[in-house]
Image 1 (cartoon, one colour):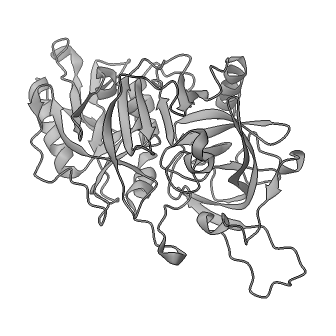
Image 2 (cartoon, rainbow, N blue to C red):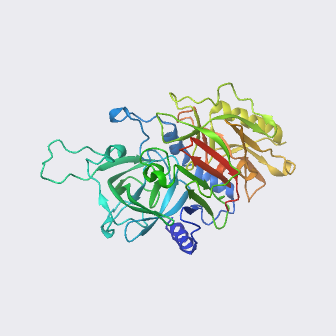
Image 3 (cartoon, rainbow, N blue to C red):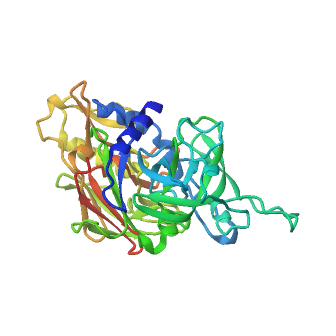
Length: 431
């Protein structure tokens, strides 16, 4: 992983910033795999913990306000952006996460953090520790101030601890100048990780940028600067230069975007729910049971757009109907085999060229998102084998949540407009 980080850093240094609010997005698959199928199977092994996080209901905090935990149960998102923290600026690669609110970085000193670059608060003249009495502290689930605090003594720094996949981290709350492209965001509140308990394999190596829609997120902390609008275009894992883009603010967003309404789950207010009404395979509407796509905040049912999950997961009845229709149309003579999370793999030599049908997601507002074929079917370069690039939600998670994942979003511009309560899609070659 150290070699991967070094390579990404070298490419980032060579990259030219497009504009103040237009940042390059890089994937962590390097070198680009000659066999995408095997790479995605390996990446998707980490999806279960991610899906557990997305499908769990957050517990109510004090005051009756509900919020998602900071990075609880997540695994490393597959995409990173270059950001700067502090004065003078310290460069970091932060994982791009649309389902997390809080931004955090590994900070020095930290003997148990992953190897790699760490933010050094002591080297930043603009860094400030935030005390336990800060308004930010309860939002980060920080420890309350001690009841017996000496009035003449300084308040302790807000400290919090969070689980993350198969590990946990301990952090202190601070603020500093966050730099994204040419934009400098003063007094940005973030977690400064000082200790990690457990393995660090599933932690982002340098930190995470929270792009959810809760009070700690980038959109909330920047207010009118970006007016609650951002978009991203994720490059394919196969792309050599592996660079897409994160665009902040309404300016420069494409005009050919088709928007569908955003839905709000009060139990998980950070997540981007959309109203998927059905699926098609080719020209055939998938015959999913009635109510299979219904949005229900009380159970968490519905469909989430997420940048951190690798492959799209559908609830059992939806996936069964999708898979059966896909198999019916492909009609592979030798049948289908399973490989990793995929259960619809077939011999491409036995299927006529162009025999695999496209998959379309139908959403509220009349939006029909037909996935590019490379987002629907993954090929092995070693054998004449291809697999339907979607799967059933694992049995150990809340099985009512559908998750549209990053593999299916590649080379699609996803525009999130929180202020307008909508999310849009437009085809775009991000590679």
